[in-house]
Amino acid sequence: MKNNSTIEVVLLGGKGTIGSGLRKFLPKINPNYRFTIVDNEQSIDKSDDVNSNEVFINLDISNEEEKLSEVLLNKDLIIYLARKDPLNEMNKMTDLVFKTVEKFNPNALIIGSSSVHATGGAYFPFLKEPYKTIASREFNKLETWPELLNANIEPCPTGDYGLEKAYVESWCQRFAVTNMNAIAARWGGINIDNKMIDEVAYFTVWCHQEDSAKFVDNCYKTFVDGKLRSGAHYYVISKNKYSIFDIETPKKEIGYNPIHDAEIFY
Image (cartoon, rainbow, N blue to C red; front, side):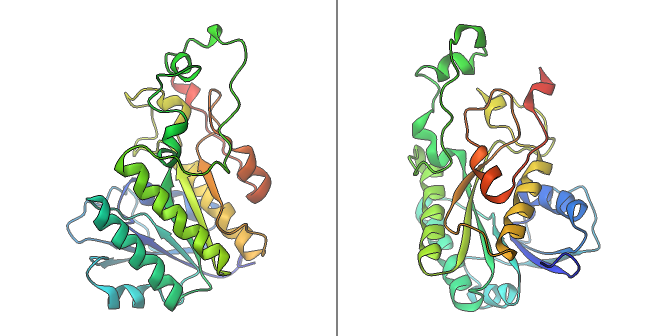
């Protein structure tokens, strides 16, 4: 276990909302995390923290393959957060990232950025019951809470965004069958202010940045211990009272124990 030595992390697309949260909270969990932040030069850095444990590399991931391979060498943890449009270009970038890891750093752990939207077909757009009643917060009308959407449910995306996330998950599963290590993080509703936003049923999917960092740390610890179920896809949301997603599976398998609850905003 690398508790007492540097943990080299690459954040591909690390200037964004999820990346900025990981940069803020992961060092509070373990000060040995060191970050290489890879992003386009023109991208706006959403982090409000200045860390001495960060190195920035301006890189167009899709068009600088050689430089990408150099960045990924000898890193312990690779977190793939970058995205682009349209869908075919996004999937090409995903191919490139995973193939580069496969070739140049197959012993690392890669956490691929998925989303609850990868399984949006199971509950969205909150028009069918009981999700319609939940979305309107009429909880007293429910006789029983619905069975939580199991973390092991296969992708059932709606729209291009969900499709791109399902594609990331397919790469994680491919890594698993070739004895490499990858986890798909089905991120919930993460925002830069860690607050509620005006979006239907956001309280069910909300995730505090601190909880997202706890998830990543749990994945890495489990990986180092040799107990990670490679190819798994887990929902990454906070401990929301009115959740519709299963977080017991990642709790049992990697020790994920979120601490925040969206109900503080109601």
